[in-house]
Length: 494
Image 1 (cartoon, rainbow, N blue to C red):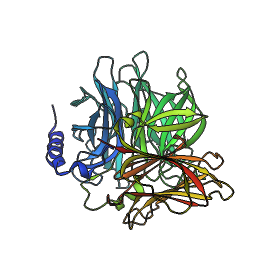
Image 2 (image 1 turned 180 degrees about the vertical axis):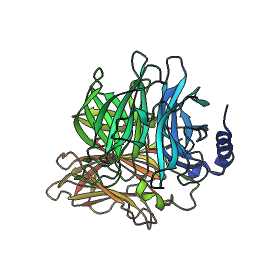
Image 3 (image 1 turned 90 degrees about the vertical axis):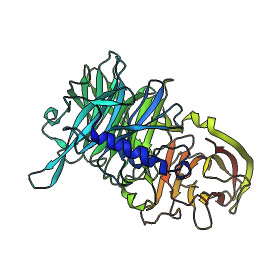
Image 4 (image 1 turned 30 degrees about the vertical axis):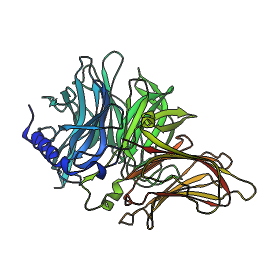
């Protein structure tokens, strides 16, 4: 039986979604049906479709009491909205249904596990959000909350672990049908840790181990963990808050980190081998993965920056979007990300150039657009080879965003200073890339309100939201010195 709170949310989104035209949204990135979106939740393949839930406040384009929005897709690019799946309507989650995940149980039911939030007063009179882990069972459309929620609460935690910052369970099913999950926590030193729990049936849970922790080396609280095998290793993905920058690998603020290591499933022990950033751009957080039916590990994330929320246009009817889903691999111990191959089915008209010499700012006929897939191979030429190469996109008379490469130092720079933001936030990011004697490959996917840039076939990725007017659709190429480029551009057609 649905609560009044959930029915109210469903009625609201059904009524007001019609006021947002398809042209006001991205073409192939998921946005909320109405209102606000943040973290992806419950990303999975169930009953022949991909399901993607998301943190959701339908009643405004600002963060509010968290619901779960819901959409399904057969190809990860065309999304159909379903009614909201969860609302804060029970004694275990009356202050919010925070992030979580989903699995298919052996009996075919769909299980959602999420963080239920209860706001209370602390000893000092200030509000405290007590966070516990809850369940809901369903059929892919409607879900009933477990009558004995929460199933994991603070009583299971060691004394030094927080009851207030204890959230974002990521589930998986073991080969024997039992379940495990990782949950994020904040420890007594103020920094993050990831806890591993096990259950025979999903309702009774036991703390097995602490998989890894920050000790204040990589930010404070770790949010939205994920844990999965990939190409012979295990990946622990975490989202550190309040980091201090570490070279060009991690920037100040909130990050997403990929920790590569080995895992002893019997002992429930994870051994860290390396750690690196997942995305070097301006807008990327709370990544979550799923296993596709064909064995691909696919990741999606919230394409937004918590520190830049005030920059959204005041007249925007929705807020928040997901990244393009990405296929993941490991190469030389580092995460490789590529756009899901399904994007190729949307390729329309092709424009290509080979061996074009670039010296001053140059445009190429047919190379423009805001819903395109553009690949540019850049290589040096002769003694006066380039010292800086720049691509300007979303280019108009007053606006542009750029991606630049400097062979000296092998750095890629993203700059959206002139993209149309109305607030003076940080609009620049950079990252180190593999030195290839002045050669670099940039693949840029534009979708009206965003850019995702894949460097050297996904060795690095930089993601950014754009608020540039859609009339700014030009693209130009600039070199300090001489460069030779090959260009391949496809229109994206839905």
